[in-house]
Length: 156
Length: 156
DNA sequence: AATATACCGTTGCCGATGCAACGAAGTCAA
DNA sequence: TTGACTTCGTTGCATCGGCAACGGTATATT
Image 1 (cartoon, rainbow over the protein chains, first blue to last red):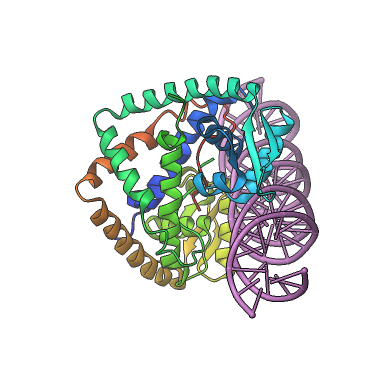
Image 2: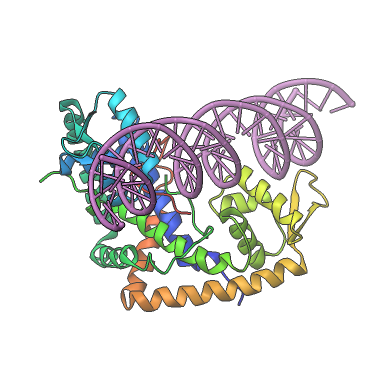
């Protein structure tokens, strides 16, 4: 048999990710017009307190420039505050404002509800899926010297 | 507890998809400098014979414009041929050239090897993952009236 | 202390992407 | 036949995202 795209794991993963992302977007879209990077930065700040751009970049799979721009927008919207680090003046310290925390409280609830919904739909396979995702995520980023593109779809 | 991005399924799915895509890209990147849409169009044509832009658009989760542009590039590279449909002259019929088939033969082998590798790494959880992905993919695209963005990462 | 080197965050730039409008072509109904 | 309405593929446009270069700062070496 010839190669079947529909059976190809990277492709399926990608489509699934898009699909799920779209669904979730429909939920929080009503709450606030956030972009993906904004949402991630917000979420990371919410449970990490004060962090630098670098931290988020490393932690949340987001380019430095994205973090920077997202932070700028969020600051403009009044959801976070930027300040200089006390000793190392290269660092920019990001921190949620009360408004930001309030927003994340609402979004967090939405996210958790959505997550619960997904888990319910997946049934008992959910835990195995988690396990598999963990493996896939943890994998050899090192074994990827360069790279060009793939067989997947956008996640946003 | 506050909301944890790392435990959020849409986010994890997205990161996993990126990761896997990058790994795969490293493999076929050496073979041909294809973009994601190009790869998908090629793959779909390979097992479908003659199809229209519309078909691919519907089938492969790719915007019409993407399919159109990818097809144009692939035509330029000599991997496919575009011709008019006999009766319905609105349709553009896409078809692989011998070169295109030869390329997909090589890429198909690479893809299958990669797939096998992933399956091996995932072990017995693979089948459950497949099952879960099928459910996620099949889900309510209808329940997504508009949408804005999500909590995921790029797949390319 | 002075120089070289490494790191941080911002910005410019270019290609990729999604949406919407358009021309072309087909269908249906009067 | 004529004219509204739908469908197909292309193209324009605005945005997004990744890469790389830049200014600014800290650290290491001499």
